[in-house]
Amino acid sequence: MRYLRYGFLAIVGLCLLVVALANRGMVGIKLLPEEMAAEVGQPFQYEMPLFVIIFASIAVGLLIGFVWEWFREHKHRAEARLQKREKEKLARQVRGMRAEKSQGQDDVLALLDAN
Image 1 (cartoon, rainbow, N blue to C red):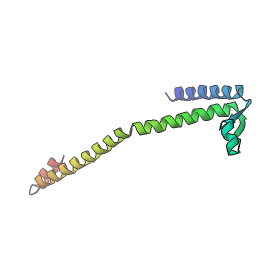
Image 2 (spheres, rainbow, N blue to C red):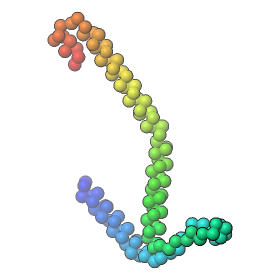
Image 3 (cartoon, helix red, strand yellow):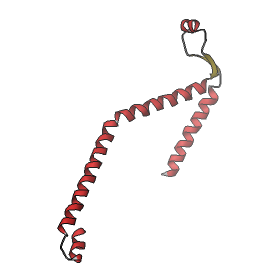
Image 4 (cartoon, rainbow, N blue to C red):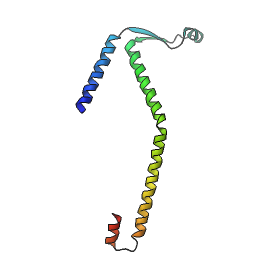
């Protein structure tokens, strides 16, 4: 199974390398429309290879997806936390009840009841 994962990662890496080599041309990226850039006085235009823009957009998309999923699963994490507290509370109660029951008993019987 580990070799399948390494093989898959190698294929993905090779594909990303091919995409990067095929898109080495420089492109201009404008962060603001021309009218807004003229009012601000700063063009906010950058020249960079196309593959950088492609990989950056993939990374930003993944980041947005991870954050969105983290917010979506908040209710599940809260419910799990609540159930964990309830389980710990019940375990403490059971230990207390066992301790009460074993009061005044023979040590051997108390050990057997504890299991």
